[in-house]
Amino acid sequence: MIIKDAQFVISNTDYRKCPQDGNPEYAFIGRSNVGKSSLINTLTNRKGLAMTSSKPGKTQLINHFIINNEWYLVDLPGYGYAQRGKEGREQIRKIIDSYILKREALTCLFLLLDSRHEPQKIDIEFMNWLGEEGVPFAIVFTKIDKLSKGALKKNTDSYIDTLKETWEELPPIFYTSSEHRIGIEDVLGYIDQINKSL
Image (cartoon, rainbow, N blue to C red; front, side, top):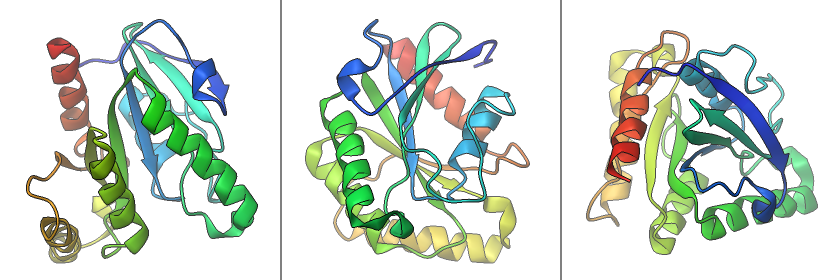
């Protein structure tokens, strides 16, 4: 898939105020500092489309971008950012939960995991919740250029083995590096494949 056009459309805290044209939506989510904005910018070939920040917790809204006038890329707030305080975390969780569970246009959720870390309890719990709720999602390991092949295999295998303890069938898994454009075509190809089947 070639992305010819990517435009910011709207930001919201309420899924009911999101676009109502029925175009499929592919949402991206992950813990703070997982490399979400960088991945979105690389996927769309637009440097400043999603705001990147060294300060975690930057995205606090549901951000819609229309791609090729055919589908939406949705940038969701990061979850589990400790410095936001309990009230702030709860507010963000409500925004995320209501979008994921109630947004009919949501076609696939891409869950980003930082490949430099071993399985994190919060990520495993989030995936199990998605599974229980029947939300279609794919796993995207980010920053794979930041560690050796051995360390990458160890960390990603560890995640997969942890999931296999409770999952009969694993969701699709992608390995990406925004900096070196690794895995970008795979993610776009997967979106293209789903779009063609709708």
